[in-house]
Image (cartoon, helix red, strand yellow):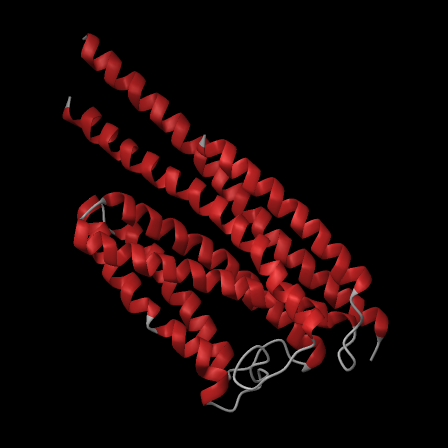
Length: 225
Length: 52
């Protein structure tokens, strides 16, 4: 049942993505100043929205773990964090490619870029921490605390372009910014399939985490003999 | 703006986005295989020890 639901979500995401790629590459006009490369925004921004959604889900799951002590919440948190990191990497690297052609530099240490990188590294640190602790409940408890603390950086990343002068453009979707409605629709329209892909990846990764825990149980049993 | 260079960078952006997702899916597949094979080995080992 679960596999069938995930397959349906995957097929739907694929169809929406094919349609979106057709519309964004064929139908949408080039941006007046940036030309064709502006279309990177349709992956760059939805990728970070997806990453933030994953980090937020990990935050909620971590809080739930601390209250309910159910390891399934911990499995969900690690799955969401790992998938969030993949989408965070897409955001960072597509941003660098875009910056290279528009700014002439792939990277600069401004508030937005630096805080995004720090956020990514903090969540990567969460995964490293998990590998360092063997006892499952201790690992889940400490990882939950780290996940909750890590999320404090996310609002800073989001609002950094409003609070500071940055090389990165000011907000175009909120805070007084503007964007052509056809671009805006495509941007949100491409977030939907990316979220659907994230749901599938989180479900698969969560199942693996549970299998991994089962495996650790078998390992202990094998050593006990 | 150089139109060809502009399209090249757009292609880089789209390729990188998909390459990261594909790499992550491949990582999940390889992890799944590793877990399954280790699970089978451990089950076999426990069964052998129980028989003895």
